[in-house]
Length: 601
Ligand code: F6R
Image 1: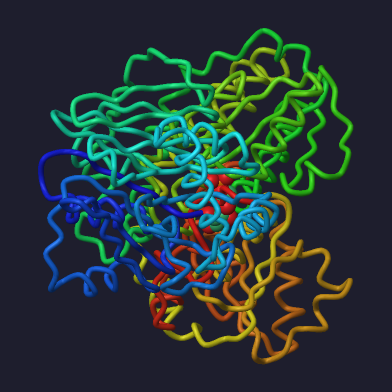
Image 2: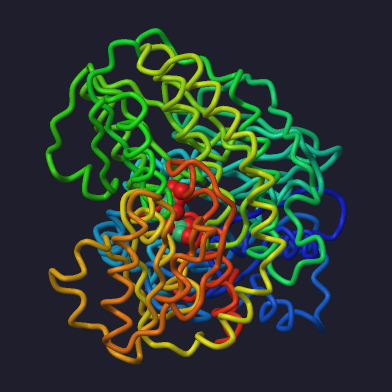
């Protein structure tokens, strides 16, 4: 989970690389570096810390080359340090490499190279690539393209690579396997990066590389090849994102901006209703399997409840990292729904490949056009969230929910498990969710004040029943991720089976209470924790004051159908996590130890 960038053109490469890296800092930010071909030599500057540390390091230098590569790191092999930062080079510093991914057989290659006399400087898996390139460069009479192909042939694992060679001042070579990589076409200049925001300032014409593809970037063109060296001809893809959508637009943090974007994102996603055209095969689906990781998995839990409620099809939901290893029962009659904001999560992709190998049809819900998932799935529904930059997912989650509801309703429609009138009622309600979400966001100060009083709690529990339980899972994850508060989620009915032993007067319990027929039961659960000294908050759709006497505070959200409430009730929880994070002096956009796109296992 690192970000790589590259530039070749006629202007100073350094500021272009630094700016591009800033756009990818969400992918990793424990160290950064660049390699620029300046006159005759490759100048490498890299250091531990965020990109601003790198900027400070080179502030007084003039590095004037017009081509280079860059890297922002999320450490896997070797601690964050100057020497472990990328780019890594061969011994003589004539070949430089940036890499996102993990080379699984690096230890084997390393000992082979050490036996050849190579002395390693870093603990990274990437350094083996630089030395292996050097080896093949010499063996191929200094043909860097051939050397790259031969090197790729030895690598196992995942990589998006950028290679710069001092003897080839006219080209940068990039390659991909199981890590995202996009190249962008400019006018007399060309670009590469791990993700589109790195390129967007300069071009909207891109090629998303597939696995086992290589691209050679010259100043005036980009040539595409397979990793066997066969030439590929492909039309570029036009990216139509609004550039402002990838910027902060006056908000202090991307996360706050993205929370505010939810009403629009929900509406935009809802407008897809008429475009969702399920294949006929959905008529005879006998079982649905949903897999995903993290927040996307929580969207899957909501999806299970919705599918079973609307369609009566049995649904299994599993985290992708478990699914891929547990020898699951798969069948051709299963529909396999995969949810992934990035479409690049390694565990999720592995689960997809496993299900595919058993003949299951794959429907992907993703936010990223051109992502690996979108290319490997049989059907794709794109959430219309726009780019999500903050590491903690917000608008991607609520739009994933919107997609799950629409999918469940479409399935109910084609299988005749819901009357026309019922369907219309549900769609009319879904159409109101956006404005209801807006009401919640407009009332954010109430949550801000609550967070100002509670941010120091060292234990926060979220509880709920049915759909509210799914929201509890997501709420606890948000708080862990960005406030670093120990938080857990419980199905409220489980309290008495153990967790209540943890409750004391240092605990905050947040009850999500939107399931009308279970209001009373939840009120009893709240009393049980309050009696044991916990502070309590209810996030509820009840407007009658039912919870007023049982909780310390109530945050009332607009009413909706019970099934649809997660799209609303999660928003106060996102805001609570955000404000607690700020109160604790954290950076909510870049939480420690986390990266936006988990492209390694
Ligand atoms: C939480 C979060 C992660 C992701 C998870 C899956 O805020 O962002 O838990 O949801 O890493 O990522 P995607 O959806 O890209 O597959």
